[in-house]
Amino acid sequence: MEKEKFAGIFPALMTAFGGDSGIGMYSIARLVEKLRADGVNGLYVGGSSAEMILCSTEERRKILEGAMSASDGLTIIAHIGAASTNDSLELARHAVMCGVDAISSVTPFYYKYRFDEVKHYYERLADVGLPLIIYNIPALTGASYGFDQLCELLEIPGVEGMKFTSSDFYLLNRLAAKYPEKVFYNGSDEMLLSGLAAGADGGIGTTYNFMPDVFGCIWSLFSEGRMSEALELQRIADRVISVVLKYGSVVGSKQMIEYYGVPYGICREPFLPLDEAAKNDLYENAWKLLESWRNTK
Image (cartoon, rainbow, N blue to C red; front, side):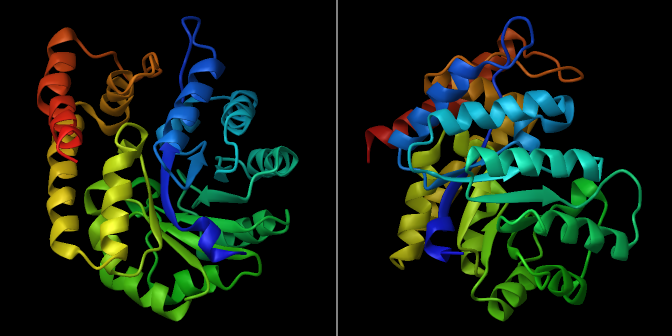
């Protein structure tokens, strides 16, 4: 795997739903075009931010196809994790046909699987033939592994990296140091700079869907060694994120995409739509802050 191709800022692409709750293919393509124009390095398609567990396997195929239609040179990582190994493999084979650059999957979730079962799951996915990025997010999957176990997963032939969504940056630093040839992504938007300092090669995030320029600047400033400026910009991003999180990262971010210029609909139930007071709060206290920063760039 060409590591440089996988470095940088990767929005965890969100899913637009139409009025009939179908997939909004046109809106997805428009958002991808806008993100590409704003300089992102790639896309992470079909993950948590895409409401993947609320979509059928057929819908997830459409989401990937919509993203690919407008990707035009972006590095594409397709998240193909599912509750069933068979569904994951079906999505992985579809990803191969679509021509993605890599696949990724969360640790098997809901049941408390033994480690050997989790390892076997990743071995099955690695056999598909594309670079595989493990998605380590213990807060949501309930699977929390230490250094030795994560090393065992990273040493599966075909596993080329990890999306690391945790605040244990000591662990991330040890993994990145041991496997310099593999790619590591920070997964918590509010801690991108911390992840980069610990050895991450880039970030994958939900709020990158509407402020890719902010995170692109943080990454560039860090790469240039301009840490104080990067820290100040991370603080601005975190002020925006703190407002978004009042309404949930998925629900709040989808509304912010509309302010970014792409009508994107609402989230699927059990998520509930925002009321006007919440939309106004996001606009006045999050979006205007972003606009103020953009006007001073």
